[in-house]
Image: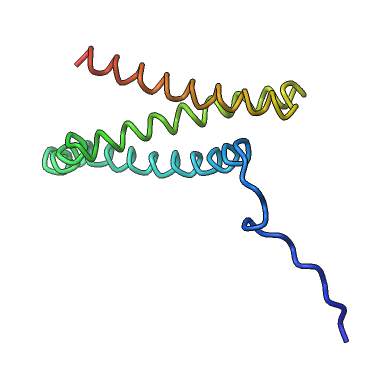
Length: 127
């Protein structure tokens, strides 16, 4: 008879904490960026296909839905970039204590939000 092997713990057992959520969000933001690249490819393909094709996607992206998608994409881009810089800092063995990791996580979220708002203010002013 085979011995009963221990079962690996799953996410319901672990207590969620901020740096864990940021790690998962970093992976999710990478996936979201990949989907965004597909949308950009669709937009460029429609642009190359002619005025009728471009008019369809331009109508979609000019509406509220399109602006929300672009706003979210810009936040995801800035979050992934800032968190990537945080990971590079960790590669130098800097900021690895619990408190420093938590504080750098707050900086990442704040910087991503601030950069997103600044980008969209610049777009609104230029428009």
